[in-house]
Image (cartoon, rainbow, N blue to C red; front, side, top):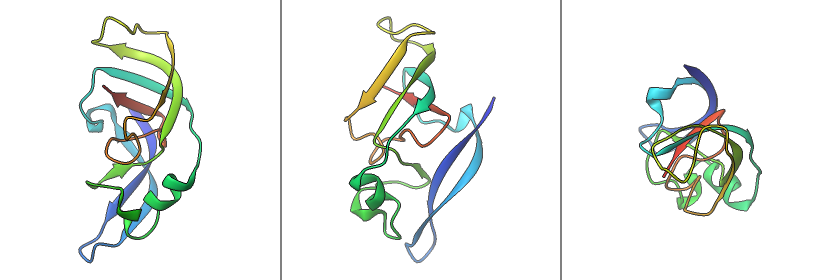
Length: 109
């Protein structure tokens, strides 16, 4: 099932750019919990990640920024979370090392 995300990509010269793209759930990184993202915020680290050099924070491209997210669990392999649960995720280097909340869906550990 498709969804939209703000995807950061890097060209051959190492310059990063961002664009809203349509992705498939198979594009999501590995994780145990898939979340339908309803909210995310913008802060200083997000601004750095969106800069032409990724602010030194983005480790691997393509990347989805957004250092936090809130939403509803769609699927889970973790018994602590069930579909329909409301969740908030902050920290864990989301939006820097791991794909973050600037998408309609996220998959997290």
